[in-house]
Length: 64
Image (cartoon, rainbow, N blue to C red; front, side, top):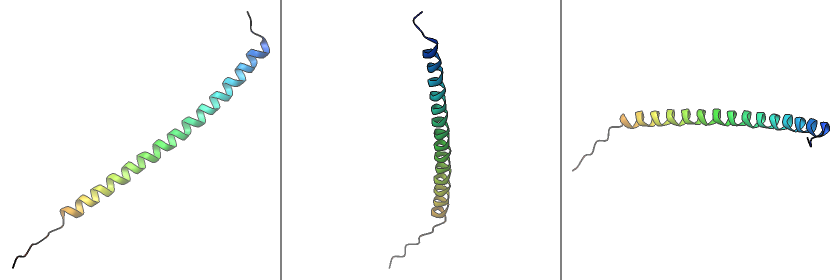
């Protein structure tokens, strides 16, 4: 067979460590995704307000 019980148990322990690391990485990525989504909403809102402000600007050119 070529495998020892101790080696296989160590393999299981490494799997558990790797799973914990991946869960932490996924949590960080979800937080980053949430932050990016908020930034997108903020930028879209700012653009909307800028567009509204610009649409309300009336420039009158007077030539003499």
